[in-house]
Image 1 (cartoon, helix red, strand yellow):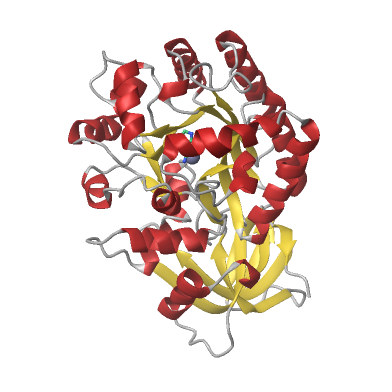
Image 2 (cartoon, protein in one colour; image 1 turned 90 degrees about the vertical axis):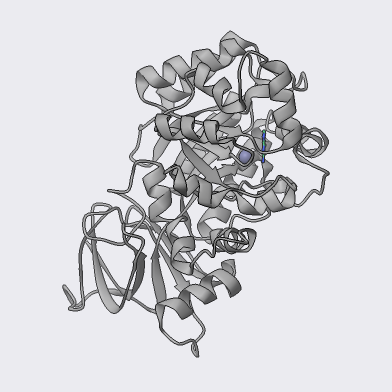
Length: 408
Ligand code: GUN
Ligand code: ZN
């Protein structure tokens, strides 16, 4: 058992916020088993200098792109051709794949992220190595290698049947082998995946109730390309629907340029959206239709989308989320919710993750505040979102284990 004295700031499922100072969190076997203003015993860690948030969740991030952030391009397709594919090729070298995975998970932890949904470079051995390093670092991940079998450079393109076999092998090797690791089938996006590959993934994932992630309608040129490649489908979303790729365990990155019909398909299939505002800014992709997504009752939450996103630090992504919406005034509470409990809900894990409550996993992010800051929830969230940076992260806990502690 461990006990931590701290100040709790957590969202609740009705999107309200709870702030309680000088609380004792009692942790046993990875879970929060009690919270009280009275100590449970005389031995405790004193983190009363910090505010304790639920562990931050990044729903969309590319591990193998962490070293090519901030490479300016005119738009998505040019950016992929100019920088991304050549960088992902480097992961064919197992030493590079290991180094970048080690660095990635260390960075995530130092940014206070406890759960990440991750794209790894197409080489399956890079994904295998990434799982080993995630296990070593003790990070909670849902992760898969990016699948492509056409319209991409030869050095990344894989044979369709082999690609499917490799993905299924990694699924069996890593999915739920520990409570922290899960596999996600990861067709990159429709233009680089054959119908056969997408159908194969769709069938296996739906038979096995596995997660799927891909990109949807991020960029207008991409949209045009999809219409040329799939003339029999009425929309980009319909392409995925026809290949059995949609469902409640499907996470669709971006989903910016959607028609009402497409949103209706997402509502009906209970598919989820990962909104990546920093990336959308960076690649000039367009503006996410937040009000329409809410009106259609489609679950969504936030992702960094590093390397098109410039940072793994989720409070920065919350800031971009607020800045990107002109008409809808996002509250600070909402910004926190969509990086914690709202993100857990997208994963179907709101009973386990995303808030600091008795019975939940002890995934906790401790952030230091300036001494002169008024200890009120709005002030704390303002500081977190607008001013803080990774240097303010004091400690990161996952499943009750300290996985990062600030030096000094
Ligand atoms: N669409 C297809 N691949 C990618 C990628 O790596 N990043 C982003 N932002 N969009 C994509
Ligand atoms: Zn992406």
